[in-house]
Length: 632
Image 1 (cartoon, rainbow, N blue to C red):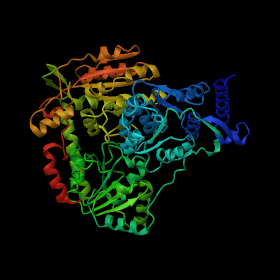
Image 2: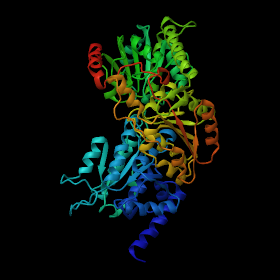
Image 3: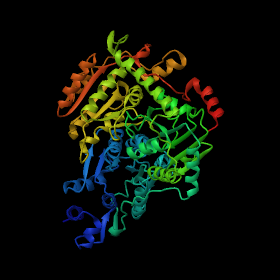
Image 4: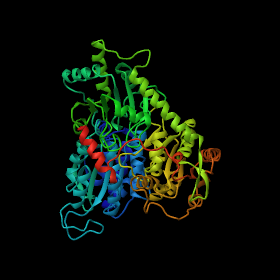
């Protein structure tokens, strides 16, 4: 038996033992696994990730990761891990992001060296923007520098890819095999950070991956850190918050993605006790049910009549878990009448985003409970049987918003110049699909662009976890890739991707991998044959769109059915035809792709409008002037 055969035999034995024991520590305590072993770096890495609960790998192998592939091949054969090969590194990143976001399962994305790693790195802006922890394992150039490695960054700068990755977030190059313990500890602190999870980039030089680590101490491998909720340390901060709340009649609570773990009942009780109204950011509907009387729905640069009214007229803003992204608060111009701000956030830099604000750094739920406790101790309860003047005025605006939307539901089709016929408006088509999804307990994923913008104005979920939309990075092609997470999740949901024609064409590979991975799900393509979000922005700013559309006709049904195992359906030209297509697609035991022609044009009933400002294009001067006037 040569050394490679012996190594394979030892790997198989280790994998069998771990599969039965459940953990490295338990296997060693039971005497089934030796504490010290002569073992390659890549196998130690796989064991280390297994020790943190990571058993799923998604990506594409290349010459920069062949040794890692050999380790994972054996471990998968023994049932220790699952490896999913896909057709695009961007897609792999989106799948892993959705797997963590939707199901709470942490995966590792693997790539080769160079272009593949750069693609995954680019896609990692999505989990980075949305606070999602994932491991990225990139092949990298050799450490001996014997000459340029194929596909490395052509530069004589040492560890050039590490520099690029480090500009995105926490990164580590395994230049020395024994550094793996530190790398995994730092990785765990990033990926499993309870308050601020984010990606971790692990670079594997090709000549180091197969190095033998002599007498490697397997008990040195770190485990997943224990989560600890952080709360403000002094009562003085709570006292200040309570004084602000008791001294203001017009209070608005605006949440961002960092509030996604706040319980709905807790939020409702807090709003009642403080007589506040609620506005959510685009990314997180469902923290408060859409029909809750204090829920003014979405606010910001796209926003809603009621959401933006509540933001622009409040005296006290209580911001929870938000970065203050430009569309979230209309580039800082939403708070026209704010006197005080309470900014609750686990990130000090975000808690200090606004001037004249009280930062409350820590876990949002714990802080809300602390404020409510002190309010009760002081006998302060601002809720009342009849709506206050503030609540009544906001509820009036919500009725106005509902009527505004109702006019668009009453006019579901309009004549479109490109289609040369009447087609569904995008709001009516999206509303039809949203209603169908809610009736059938389908999880919704929204892609970037006009579909996304109309989507977060329409969606009003009754609870969290029913809608996912990447408004942080607004990554085109995210939704179609993200639903593939349901093919590999332990307890999958049926998921549906809402995507425009532009976003779909950015990454159509999921159709192939849906069959490969056995997905049962749906993609609905809302086709206006253009990048409508940008066309609309150009027209609003300059009166003319430019290079954001084309005259190419694509038969998306034929395109879908070119992949054996995928079914294509026409969504037709009316709500009834679309419902029928949805029912047929939902009944299919595989991936369904439904094509819906939608309207683009000047008729205001064809869209849901804009109700806030945004610091882009020729609006910048006025928006910035207003931002500095407000001075927050």
